Image (cartoon, rainbow, N blue to C red; front, top):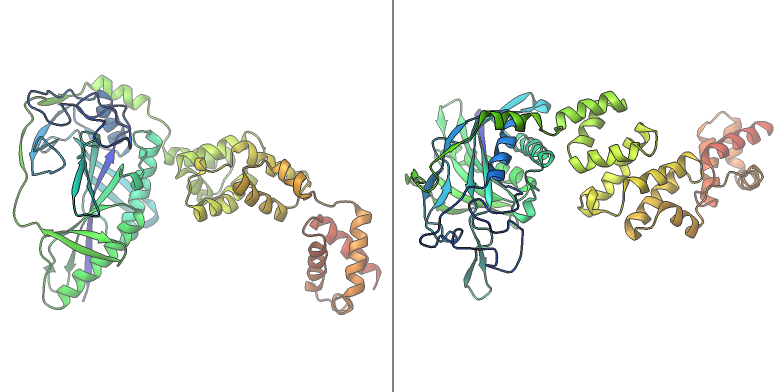
Length: 474
């Protein structure tokens, strides 16, 4: 059978404003339960909303970064659906007339354009906390936090494509500084809509919605699971039901939450806000002050720093990492060396410790200090890697680590020749191998010198002097 997978995403992104969407309560993550609340976000009788202008600005910025058309006239609506964590009984959102439409993100890696149907502004719900005794408590601190919902067309066909899209979306929103896009804190949440088409028989499975996935890995795994589940049902002559599911990481499966049926949200115009008019001059001003985005920064890195395209792509997908690179090359004039260290040992350490670059003790000043020690032959490249590990563990400067642990590179020729002669005297077979033209013997002998020097010998000088010594013995 020939199957085609159809995937669309709905991404909810909390905006990094100082206050909530329709009131003056702080939009700060955390805090004691129900301390960031007022009559407006609690939906008390007589409380009137006032729209957050910064939230609208951030929505426009996001739309521009995602190649959207910005609607100068959009509409706010009441979405009547029972939210146990919104006391007023409805959510203020946008239905028929969103603020942004018809955008896209290019996935160059797979040669595909993913269309964005709409971006609309709305408010977040509160948070349910389930106790060990079976009680459910509601924290309304998050109720009323400004959101944008980004809805794609069903243009993706694999979990990998969905992951690529989310990576690029997250990077752009981070560059814009409209959201911290932290999935672990819920400021970026993703719902997946997926179904399968049997192209040979013309059969199509019903759409399954997977709610509130909290990591890109979970998105990819949930898509793979649902893809296989839908295929197995169609192959067995069955079909899925219209349903909402959740991803259970512990068992690696999606779990049925509820059937969707044919129920529809009941939208009516939000009479307390109504039509949202955005001035074209204001949109143009926002456009003129847009920050440099990942694609633009990548092109500049290739041009200004002579980096390969792949290196520039990696370094610019994360705003903090790109800034870290630029600040480091201001301190050490070796674009390639800085790139190689960041993309190699630095990113490996960050990945192992599950940190962002700004959460580590490493700074551009400290990395430049380390690389300058290597360029000056004070330490070897391998010792530099050891120093970097110690820096991550202790926060000490490279110079301090080198001094305290006696890691300075040995470049004194007399001292090196003494070690070389010792190794030669202990490895007669390797000497014979070298005389027989076996080049690897030289590498072995140099390695033995590095071993007894505990990696501190200057490897280039050792190789040079070892070859001179061996040639003199022929």
